[in-house]
Length: 87
Image (cartoon, rainbow, N blue to C red; front, side):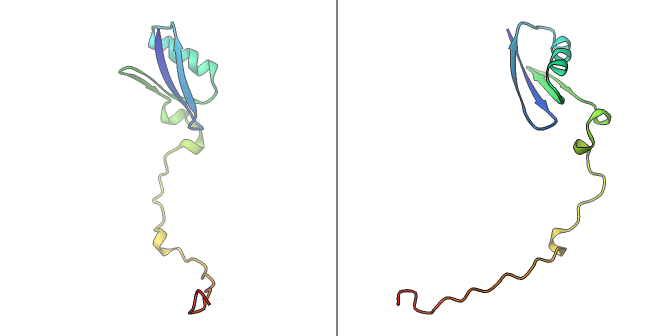
């Protein structure tokens, strides 16, 4: 019996224990059995969906991310407390 760890495009997945010994056969089975499989691992073998076939939400960003320090935040209201917290 072999185990195959698989991941989907929604970062879900699982482990399949089965009698399929051939890795390529297991990849074909898992891709047909579950929607959105993007990665399968077993022992030293790894299969991953090619970048060109991944959904747009999975595509690697090519534009640099903006500097978050330049983002202005709305001022927070100041809550004043009395000097004597117990009286």
